[in-house]
Length: 255
Image 1 (cartoon, rainbow, N blue to C red):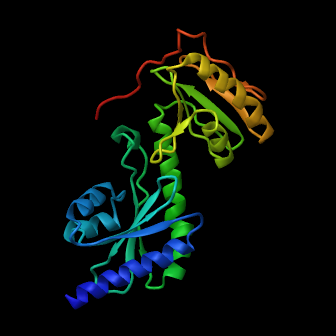
Image 2 (image 1 turned 45 degrees about the vertical axis):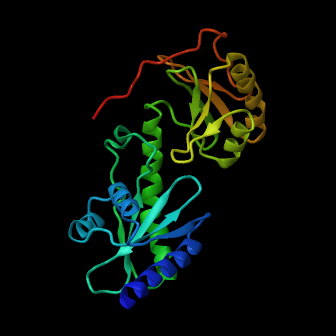
């Protein structure tokens, strides 16, 4: 019992230090052995088909430390079970994204961490985190139904089948402008959506964000269904008249 307690303390302390050394804002939480449902859910979402998957096949999660970033990215730290010092770390797949959005996206497989969390932070940043962010961006793009993604200097607004408008801006400054004009952000996928329930309010919001995005250094584009994106360096292109929202054919396919 004493050894188990020490192991839990050691993992939690290690994760706290590692979270503070990673770029951006990360928080750490420890999932103990008695939180069985949480551990099962977490194991199902570990995004790995290599080292960590092999470890989990022989040693189901008995505890874990979860590192979380505000945009929904998560990393899990777990015991090695090979009598060596250190831990394993793996990416966690966001719960909110549909399974089909992960198709053809390579797993950002986990890595071994040294017993020193300061040195390990450098390894996470230079290896796992870069691969994870790349895979996560691709999956979030896929979750948009394969529509055109935004670029660092251009926000692309995509019409959705329900008449709403969705986008995944690369820059947080663009996100703040969208939020100020009625867009809502999914905390897991990072996708911003503007409802089409009130088409007049939607049109007004799209007209107003164009100049503000331009002032912040972003171009804008509106991606119509069955048509190429329309570029604009000033106001965003207004939506179709009220009562006839543009719609796209569903691109979702069952597994």
